Image (cartoon, rainbow, N blue to C red):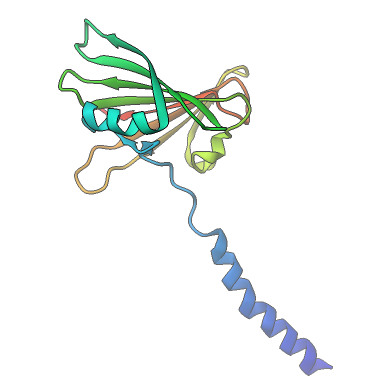
Length: 160
């Protein structure tokens, strides 16, 4: 009887470490959205976006010298549209992704415990600083919403 209990306990001890690793490392927030990476050329962004979205609007920004565009996603159950912003040099400097209501949780973007969280009880924001590999610049991901669980939008931009 003691041998059976000992054998069963040993089996459990051997199996538990295997499953504890399944949870693994916390999910890291992505440095890109829909295949768009900050710093991409405007031409590369357009090539990617034409496959998944329809351009709705384009605006020149007189003060900053760049452009801002709105792209409506063709077939996405979670996200509705993207806003892209380019520098004078025609490089992507900001991406904002707008979600369909109650479809995307803050935790879908990354571990919320790793984010800086702010709320006034009505509006919520989660901020993740994402270091760049090698000499690439760090990126800030900010998710916003008026619901404690579901976000309205999130943005990616370089940390200055």
